[in-house]
Amino acid sequence: MKGGGWLRTMAYMMREVRHSRIDVVHTHLTRAAYIGHALGLMTGVPIVTSVHIANNDQIYRRLARRNNRLVAVSNFVRGMLHGRGVPDRYIDTVYNGTDFGAFEAASPDQVKDELGIPRSRRLVGLVGKVCRDKGQLELLTAMKDVRKEHPDAHVVFVGRVDETFRADLDDAIADSGAAESVTLTGVRHDVPRMLDSFTLSTLPSRMETFGVAAIEAMARGKAVVATRVGALPEVVRHRQTGLLVDLRPNEIAEAVDYLLRNDDEREEMGRMGKFIVDQKFTLDEMTRRFENVYARAAGLHES
Image (cartoon, rainbow, N blue to C red; front, side):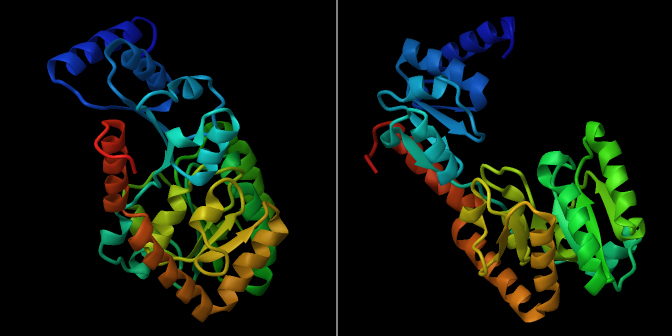
């Protein structure tokens, strides 16, 4: 959708809308939103636009017209759009969903064996891109205090390492004084199995407009330590499905220490997290909500 591809995409969409009698077009991210806006003006077809990130682009205000709908992935994003000039009556919140609850349980010991981690270790995991914004450095600093009371605690980072971040990461691992208690798995296509091996999961991000990694961990019955930023307080319920903290190593350390000390409470948080995912964050629930948005855009009902 760049350069000449923008025009080719527009021409293709015009043909599809007219020849196939398309009722609603759904776009994702900003460049597609511009194409959708132009397409809607030329054909009159309603445009549904998903907003996944904190974005101040004027296109979202322009799209707020007629039967168009803007879909925010969280109430945090919804409030951001409203605060930047989009009337709230054009916005729907549709949370992301996950199917991670449907996978069979994996053996934690088997996963540890595959990763070369002693079976006696308790894994404190973080799933996501390994980069500055996801909080790996703060977690590594926090774990220096955690290991004083829990020498069996072992950090696992699941995800691709941002190469511009690798030097800082290597320095932080060396500074932790416990490189043998840190494992980087790289990209994995069996994340549910990785989560099953965790004692608890963490998401100490600088910002999250939703927090997919949090609901994935909850779907596997894991308590989550997360920062109280963006939409994470909508996903992780403090003292019910995990603990919310500020992005400070001492607060992260206290939360991890608390969950490692209190097995029964940690397990209950995991059970509650799974229950909430099953009620609110499944793919079926996301699909149902999107069907309602499409119907509203198409003028089939008003709510």
